[in-house]
Length: 500
Image: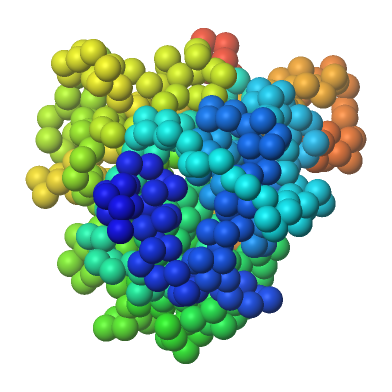
């Protein structure tokens, strides 16, 4: 085996290592049949030939709006091979939002299920050699909500993902013997774990179409049929399974490791989860912003962790080896141990900034705040945390108006601005409240005239993705203001909570 495969310098080399180790093992457990690592490599090389024929070179962008079919995984790998920056797009995005993203990216390729990219590639197509890709080469951009009213794309380098692949071995020493779920949508940050900690480490991947996620029975059945041994999802999905009394060993008999992250997990629900699988599976809570390559801290949820949590949310865990971090106060100086401050993160896993948004990049990606060292770039998470004497991080809210709903990161200002773009609306405010089925978005608007709710709903459908749609909108004569004349979001939340 070549030295580059034994010690991969980039993600394509990591995939080659997995292929060389077990070419005839299952790489994708698809409903229509298994795809081996050797077959997937052949698909990826064919796609690489097509990328080269279209003139795509390292640093060019490929936008992929594809479902979890064989072709999607092949094009993804081809991009890694040729140094092309890939971007998975949410097919449920309204056209206006997709157009915003495409305008920023200006992709050299836009691949969809409809144009069936893989089917058009000749079987005997000659691919160029793999591109010269190094650790700091960008691998992908992942788009999330933006406070300026436009989504922002976090750019992640190969080195951060190679580090993530090494990290999972602290919990799963031999990933190649496992079958990882791919419940997470490909455009969603948690899918990074599935693809890199799973498939590129030699594990079989069990894809579940995103359309199945609203139906807990459907996706649990898919995991059982695919004999998944590792399952990663947002807590909301596991809690939905529990409400149907399906979060049991009988429903998921092969799963030996559950991981969850992307939002807080209420400790009471986690206590029941732990009891249901005690002695049969490990439960691991993970934390990490999109901008730091998906995951940067973790903790096993055992009896001791549950006892320490008491009530509220599960701890975020301890920061992983290779990360620097600091909990800082308003003056960007370290707070005392146990005090609450903003979490800053440094290290090789920190991304390269936001695609085409230098202002947003400068605001969030800054030099080491403690030493101001040249080229030591840290990411300001905006998460308020405290660190205890055991090195555990505990979540205490946000320094801004970012929220999480079913694992999706949402800047409330983006919803406000979308509502205010409707001509009769003068001002708008959105909040997250706890509804009957979990967290939901509610909004209040005021303006010169009454706007039919149907008009507001239609406007939101055209402007915002499904997970950002307000569940309820009320019209007021005026929004509550604070002493500075700004909209008082806390007062608005109290008002909107009373709608129940």
